[in-house]
Image 1 (cartoon, helix red, strand yellow):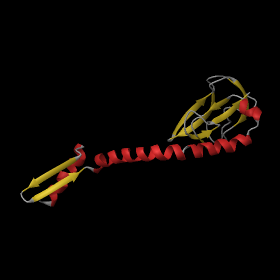
Image 2: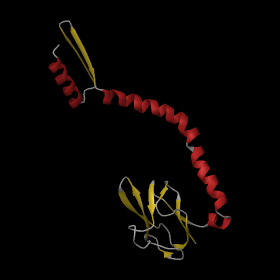
Image 3: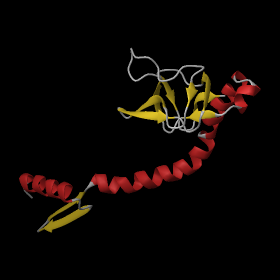
Image 4: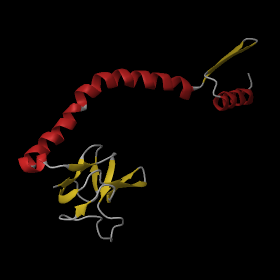
Length: 157
């Protein structure tokens, strides 16, 4: 089989999304497998099996470690206070730009719906709004710090 013909067949298979093509021409036999489609199934299946086994064992340990490390740092009074938590994973910023004044400071009164900071996720800046009223007692996340979903950002009183 001609090399140009093989190249054309490979291009056609990859563009069409066909998973597999098998051609017999005389004594020549060619089988072309579109790897992105074929490898997608094992990648989805294998990590699912690995994830089921690994995530319950591995994920709670890192999640428990920060919780255990932060619990001694907080006193019992702060732990009972209401908090504004991160709605997503990203980097928390207290101000709209590097040289600007922060959205809120310790001692400020916050109203529900008021912007308290920004979280940068995947190069997008997302405003974080207060989900309750209160007075800012402390910041649980510092400016430029990576945050996780549900992590406390601001402690209210």
